[in-house]
Length: 474
Image (cartoon, rainbow, N blue to C red; front, side, top):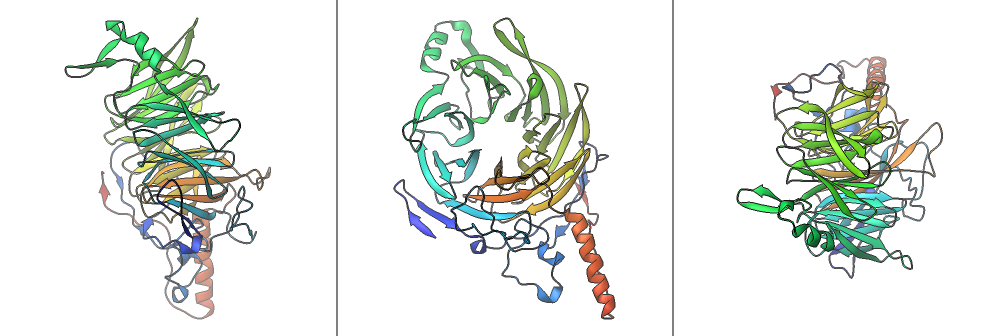
């Protein structure tokens, strides 16, 4: 369905059977705790369409979607919670537990950022617009004066957006009309800039023969994160710095020269820990220290040093596991025990760079430049790939998870997953922590097909798994 919107551009709501089939994607295996963090790793062979797991060769329908959500069947399931009134409202419990609900397409720019809060979804793009979606429909939107929207974070009635122009803009929802968002300020504030500019000592060298106020970012704001107590906002930038802002008065408390190259990700966790990942190939841990009324952050540990860029970070809900995605397609993770972080292993699920991560419950999702999303479940120290969500026609740039409170039970937590892509679309998925294991499903299907072949006296065999390939470094 296609329609016009007063904000300009064309808006589309696409049902799952309207989405074209995607191409090939990488093979998925269990995490390998023994795989080193750096160095070469095996290339991945191309994985057949997930349809081959449930269909014999003579029954394959090229018109169906390849692996859209579930590795067991290509039929998109239509559970819509929390979108009860959407056209995808019919739910069949016999369909796969992981699958696509629908797609949101606003033909105006690549999707670089998104954030979910309750039944609202905020999306940012290179059109400088922030769109707000509700029940799979566009609810409202607002526009910044300049700067691609690279990060969005929500705190109560306030929305913070990080931009390509180095500014952090603050928006407030109108109490009378929730569809109205008004800009309430910019970080740093004009008053803070004025006060700071009086003292020459507040100017620092940012490039050769160029100085700037230490409270201002001088390059793109790549990411934002809130402290656990919601008292501090962290912003990281391509200017290599990490800045700390006090939420109460929007004051910049600290600026840290964190890395030797652009900072691509920042995540605040429990126990006052803050993690930063950079294009210089390092992941650093910073500890918050309160000294009277002042707040400082000290470097506690460098978790990773490698040649390829660190592109994304995520921390699970309890703060016990830290995940790091890199440009080589690997996801390293560390586990916290007795206040120490030790390397737990590597998730190998993508052929191209991992661009985004999101963790909730026992799940961690990895989005990649290979256009796919891997859904992993953590059981102790073992991570198992449950599904490969495909359907995007461009790199998956951002992810967000919200608990599906209508369908979740004590024994079956379910999540609504939002994925934003450079194909200018956002896809909405439903994911269960109890979805069948991709590898076990393939093995069972292999056994059944071999058994059927024996019954008919057929020759030949079906193989699954990962063949070894040439070793390479990206």
